[in-house]
Image (cartoon, rainbow, N blue to C red):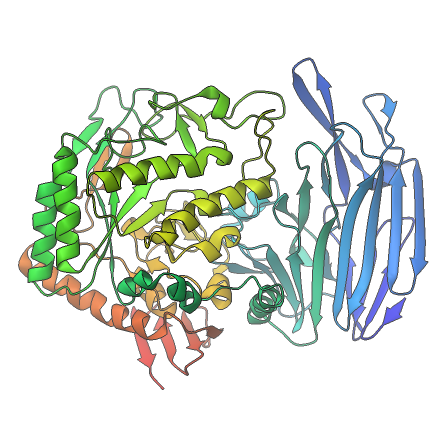
Length: 638
């Protein structure tokens, strides 16, 4: 069937689709569609997958611009199941096709997940073909790309939940000699990216739809937009335009209008420092033969160090403070008061906050309302996330040791308790970083008294940010996952995908896909410690300049100190005055650039002759060119 510039075909025998846009053919390729069916045995669930073609009944109906296929009578665990999957492909615009999926006659928790549609790839092999991926800041992957191949191959065997580091945004794309499509997941809360290899050694992608509270529940949708001449910039702008169309793009200027305090961090560098760390013996970082506890500085000592920065000429600073709670970093959440006694307790903490205010610096806290530690004074198993089988999630990686996850329904109450108590004690908090909220998929909860979908979980997290933002605090979280971006002024980082993520090799060819969408919506710092998120051997300041981001300042140098089994920044002795002045000179042009461009759209990114030389152009005409071989950047102002 044909409508506008698009012809849509479907093969009833193979289940494959073909989309022809202005004469160029995109075809189903890679992993075939399938359903995962679940069965309860005792207290546990087991699952098995079935391809769509295994359904005993298949019926396809063609109408104007639409193809509807119904799959029913799947056989699993020795019985015929009574639900029907309804798969629709519809030409919805001049250059747009929408696929949707829903279940009819759904009873019980039979459907665990569905993978549909199959990925799309070009029918013909192109001379310049590549995949566009939203993992972290983004990358492109040319067909047949061999560098870091083991990592790429591994991604074809894992699902990558949307709104995690593996998938910041619900969008991907593909280019073949200019012919381009953008895929936008319209219902992203219960969805994951799932990739495979297709024809022409291409890395191709589609979406894995997870059940919601045990069922497919609602109609799932994905939109494909086709272009005759495009690239990865086109894909980013398609998604940005989609957000504008849905009234889901909130700029940083709009956020400042609601909370003018955000202005204080325009042109400010970011200081990330720790006060106290104590590793629980149940933590995976615990070293039975090593040191598991360190006091980096008291609150009073840190205040004196901050004064020194001011006296040496630093005008602005955003201070991200880790390890300020009773037992230090990543311990006892979601209630970590009183402040660390070893560091000076309430009095020292209050004085530190006051000094920051007097100096004109922004004092912000690292905080956490998801990890729910067993030894927290407020731990109550009945408030923990409950899985479908009645168990609770378990983790013991972080410093505080054993924990589950707090159901998001209780997060806001916990936030209110902490910040009310801080206010009662006169601690002058100007910003709060609520860890992991922005970069973890919503926590589905089956507890009978507080059942939550993943989408509801994300909305409860959003209420935590909005509550504190309403009190004038500058809100931040870990990474720029799209589902909570509108609630934040800044994030901790928005780096590129590497393996390993710290000082590792790039996955594919890095591009600023994220910043092409949201640069004027969120402030993103660059050049954290030990090349985290910066390809090995390259300078993080170049990426900071290209993306016009906030620079991290490193007044304690770049040395590492082992705590337990983990290497961490040694935030103890500050550098000499001469070294600090050099550090100020390093960050000054980056701060000025960020102050100029923080609210400007990144219009275009391009490679200049090779992947080693890149250019970003902003909506005011400013352009930034970086040369990774010469380790230099150039700013052209308009």
